[in-house]
Image (cartoon, rainbow, N blue to C red):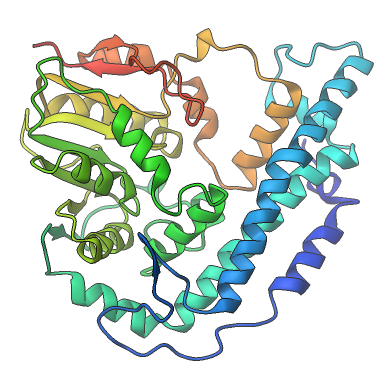
Length: 395
């Protein structure tokens, strides 16, 4: 049994220091209720956070996260290998998450790597949620003003059935994707922190859009982005293929509502629909491309199978199905003990509740069973999301 106290012993001080440094002040003034909330203007594609206080905290947390993900993780990983070797064990030997934890949980450096990451994540969400909820009227009015504006369309479904597996507070985000009406704001700026400032201008989504495989016949009239969240990849796909009809769907109404508002602000004609990826509501054979980014590790195995089947249904013959987090796990080397240790706390404390199932899914088989011809994109394996699979619907 994993001992939670052991993970945090000798490392709790860092959480206290960060909380004291960052958690004491809230928004200094209420923002005016108006159609477009930009009190500090924009930095190209990104609206700046409304106060210098909030922006400074996020900047600190982003730099802190970068340090944890680089120097701290590297030292902890090396430490994990040495611990295993000192026990006469192969750091990449077959083991469960729990076995890795049992070997490494008492080490203070390994524990620090987890505690520091978790604390930064918790405080990041609180910083952002405090800001947006303290000024909820202004932000709700901003989305409401954009709901019926174009150039693209927004389709909300407030009465839709949301499966239990979609209701978790993934990544520790308060309210998750479906329970916080301001979740789109919180998520977007939170992921800017998560990606260490490398996607503040949608740079990563630009790269992904460019490598999404296209049908062999080159015909691209319609594109579907499943699990679009705040819509950054959806917008970039629309900008890359301006003559195509591009749709983003997500179970979270707050997500697609925010995504649509941002599309209106940027003048991009992408369309958004609140819908399950496994029940999109589109006609058979409607799309040329169906894609997603980091969707499948957030759904149950049953959900993953249903989503793949839905992708096959809505693709036309010759269409391409491409996800950025599917892989043939059997062809990858074993993870190290430290990586399995990380997998445990990410699953448990970062609320990546379906991560284990995701890594046990036989994606080549699921794609084949759905009727796809399984292949590999020309780009090869992505270092960003380790995507190595694509499906083509037989012509």
